[in-house]
Amino acid sequence: MNRTRLNVAHGSWELIWAHVHRVLVVNLGIAVTNLPLLLALQVSHQPWRHPVVFGLLLLVLPGPSLAAAFAYLGATTGDEQAPVRLFVRAYRQLFRRALLVSAPFVLLMIAAVADVVTLRTTGLGTAVVPMAAVAALVAALAWPVALAHVAAGETVERRLFLLAPYAVVRHAGLALMNLVLGIVALVLVNQMPLLGLAVLPGCVLFVVWRNCRVMVALPGRHRPEAVLATLS
Image 1 (tube, rainbow, N blue to C red):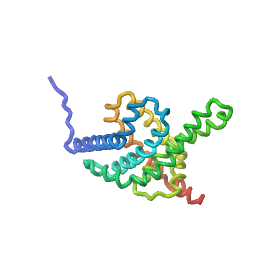
Image 2 (cartoon, rainbow, N blue to C red; image 1 turned 30 degrees about the vertical axis):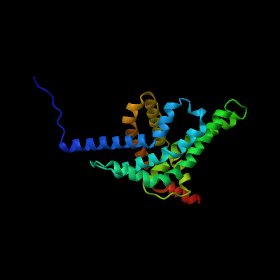
Image 3 (tube, rainbow, N blue to C red; image 1 turned 120 degrees about the vertical axis):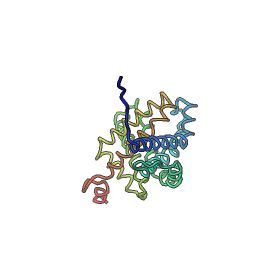
Image 4 (cartoon, helix red, strand yellow; image 1 turned 45 degrees about the vertical axis):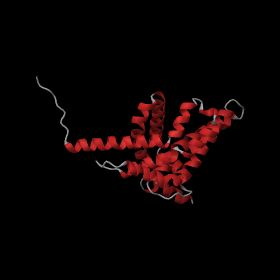
């Protein structure tokens, strides 16, 4: 009786383990740095009833952790098993810049969602709700693009808040992929918190990070920087 054996080269096993290690580090970093938010979500299943508390948590926690994850993924290439301290160092170094970049996008999302919820049943809602929904969507999609820009070591400038939304609109396909991946990950984590947090964040963020890098690295005259330079 012949048995089929899976023969994988030693170098391939190292590469596979390096990717698994990378994902596990990102998952751990995201879970630890957002622990207050995760605990608050466990305590309250209706976060919209506590807008101040959850608004502050969303404003402070996710942005720096995402920037640190992007920086860690950018610093780990090939079959290298980057240590956890790289994530910790990136989180500490990027915290302030990531917070400054995150604040406008998060505040815009919160304000737009609040407008949709408040005005959806009013006469004014017919005109305001579609615009608010579009603003919230663009802000949500531009947020990781801006954080990826910061994680790459770029300086925080005012034009970044125009560059990121432009990149989202210009590369709508990749932005839509990021949106779908984010929604699927949130739904699965909500249904299976422990398993979801152990597996999904690192995998999803790797794809999102690569997409964001492409979105701000378009060739020639289509680069966001080139377009903004002509407008300034």
